[in-house]
Image (cartoon, rainbow, N blue to C red; front, side, top):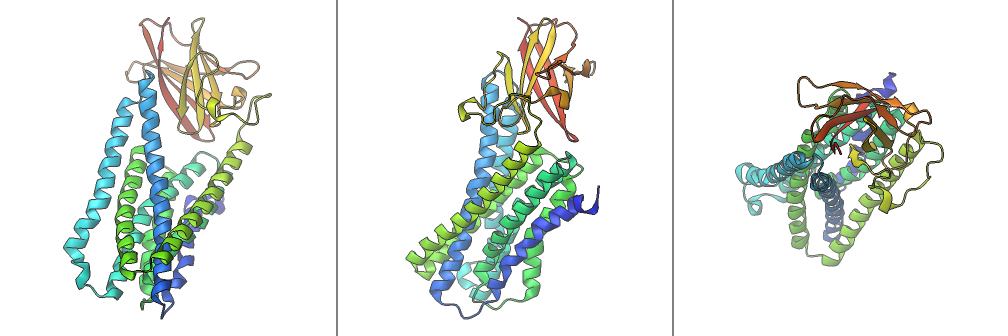
Length: 390
């Protein structure tokens, strides 16, 4: 792996752009309307991030609940992730409330200059927790061999972090602030991107990611409340509303650009089965096509498994549910994965690559508990199924 494919390099590229939004903090003698507008832009950016983070987390939990309701494993994970979301969100929100009361005190007794720095630092902490998870995604892309995707993530996050840096600097505008303070704030907000990329390059944990994102959501919600209060104090309602819209849509556009780049990379990197459709209708994205049991493996593959003549058949599709050529991938299975004496083996692709075949031991119970995994790059995407013998 060259130096330009090292996790810390891509994490730093993604995180350092947060400093690009800082010069606005050095602007002096701003009118009340201008300050209100800048603070509202910051608030709009944070509102979008809150919606994005919370939506992503809740969508994942809902998917596990739906999987459990259909008779497949997922209920325990849904409870675990739901509990982590509630815990992290509560700590992020109430932790800042406690921190402010314990170490900052009543805002009415704090000088505006000091209050602006406190607000900027709280925003930096919330963004740092969010950016840690972004770094994890970059590191996992490299660990999985998806170098192009990792670079797209780094560039996309870099563009996004530039707007986040403006969110930190906006409360400081019009107040004297030293570059040293901005350096500390930038390291707190952007540094976790590099740290997350380093960790994600060799180890990752979905529960840890859920907890960190939940913490970020809680802290961002607290900061939004404080910034909205500041907007009311400035009493420039029309300017505030326009600033909220501006910040929200700036964040939205950069996010759409990132999502589009990622989707394009995924489309180009998959090895589709000949004859696979170029586009799959949304109504067909989460449906089996061969009468088997269906599941979404870590937003990498869609699996469909079934028993046929005593053999385990595994169809693998991409995240758009388009069939992949099994001859281009490696697959493995494991029967009763929770037991020490479990049997395991490798899948073999069918001659035309339409599916994998696993020569599993005879099924003795009413249900076959099986774990299937397919390798993409260096990342295995496992999923467990319970298949009725009949």
